[in-house]
Image: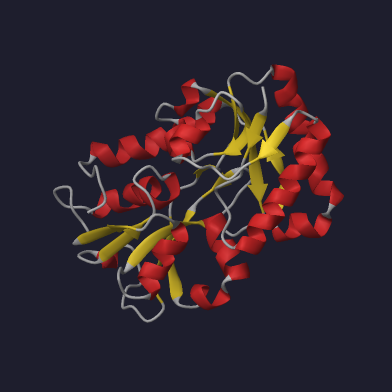
Amino acid sequence: MTWIAALPMYNVTPSLENEWRGWLADVLRMVKPACRIVDPDEELHGFWRRPNLLISQTCGYPLMHGLREQVQLVATPRFDAPGCEGAHYSSVIVTRADAPFDTLASCRGARVAYNQDDSNSGMNALRHAVAPHSQEGAFFRAALRTGSHVGSLRAVADNHADVAAIDCVTFAFVCDEMPELARQVRRIGMTAASPGLPLIASDTVPAATVEALRDALNEALALHPERAKRLRLQGFSALPLEDYERIAQLESEARAVGYTRLG
């Protein structure tokens, strides 16, 4: 079997994507399987379920909604980004720099942008933050699905939406790589924290190979300290799957007050 690997989640710019691929290539050289780095040519939910997936990164929300039955956790990155604490992260709630909103509560009746229906950072954590302010299951007057966090930032900056929740790691990368876009928005809050985006492997990957991957993750960081700095990577934690129940808790707490979807 030829293994495949990909890191699709934090490729904010092409140059940053090249840095991720370089780091991943070093990891794979240390583990030494026959493995190709690929660009997923299918919907990510299908890609993550490929039986020859050696390593990739997913979001915690799909992990807790069926994916965990077909994959195993490898590690969770620890990022140097505002809003991160250890292997946990939050989302930055933003509005336009010149918008009249100062808090999430003041956004009642505004337009929300979010990246995907199954995103923890862009949808689930924001739904949890909004839920206490909702009335009869509603808060925003319109919701726009953009397909990506950068798309949500552009929607807010271009006045197609008024507010969005952006994964704090993505937002830090945007500040680094796309400062013009970052200057067009303003932070008005943070969501609750939850475990960060985990690195996963197919459940067909041998346990010894998973352990070798865990060792190689940190070893590859040490090879190029400047690259690790640009990727804002501090290291990796091996979190138990039970820690990711926090994501389901955020969903349950929003549903408990009748706020089931952004709107």
